[in-house]
Length: 351
Image 1 (spheres, rainbow, N blue to C red):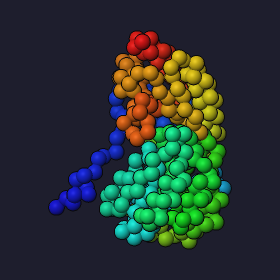
Image 2 (image 1 turned 90 degrees about the horizontal axis):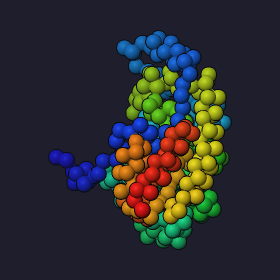
Image 3 (image 1 turned 60 degrees about the vertical axis):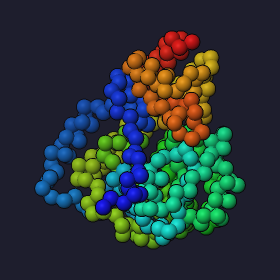
C-alpha cells in the first residue's frame, strides 16, 4: 500500500512551456564550439556502453577536487544535488528528528523530508529575504531538528543569507548544509568550515556552470563525514557518459565555462540596472545567475503575456512572501535584450 506521506506529496514543479527565449531554469547560457563538440564526440564514441561506469568516479573526483581546491576524499558525487540532499536527509540524525529550512527556498529540502516521514520545520524569511534569527533559534529549541538546509545564495530570492546568522544557528547543535549551487556567481562560501568541522557540509553542482544535462552534484565534507554519508550512495550513480563529458569539460575546456560565468555576472548587473529604470518595476538584489522582480500587475498575468512575446520566465508568486514576484535567469546578451523588450511591451499593453 502507498503510505499517506507519499500520497500527500506534490511533485517538484518544472517549467516546460516552449518559448524561443527560455530564462526560467537558472541554466548557464553557453555555446560549445565545434572543437568542443568534436572532442566530446571522440570521448563518448569510445565508451564501452555494455560496461558499468567507475563506481567511484575516481578520475572525475580528482579533477573536481583540483577545481574546488579540496581532496578527492572530501567529495561525494551525486546524480545532481537532489540526490545528495536525499542522502543527507537519510544520513543525518534519526528520522524522528525533523529538518529545518527557511521559506521560500529550494523545494527539494522539504520533499526529501516528506518522503522519509521527517518533520518539516519551515521558518519564513524576513521581508528583506534574510533569515529570521530569533524564529530559527526558537524553532530549533522547540522542535529539536537534526539538520538545517540553507540555499546560499537562496533560490528563488537570489540573495546570500547573513553569514553571522548561519553561524549563530549552527551553535544550536544542528547539522548545517550550505547548498552553494550558485557559488560561481556569488564567490561566497563556507568551504573552510566544511573541510574542518563535523557539523557542516557544502553542496556544489555542475548544473549551473553549463553542464546541467550531465546531472552531477558535489558534496564537500571532512573526510570522515564524507566516508559515512557515502555509505548510503547508490552504486554507479554517475553514468559513464556523464563522467566522460565532465572530465573533458573540466580538464580541457574549463576556460570556456569561466568565460561564460563572467559574462553572466556582467549581464546580471546590466539587466538589473535597465529593469530598475522601468516605472513601477521593483528589482531585488541578487548574488546568483537569476533575480526576482515585480511589476504593478499580477505575476501570473505578466508571465502569460511574456510567453505570448516568446519569453519564458518563472512565476514564483505562489510561494510564501513572494506575492507578485517573477524570477528571471540571465541568458546571452541578445536573450536578455529580448526579455527587456518583451517586458516593456507587456507593461505598455497592461497599463
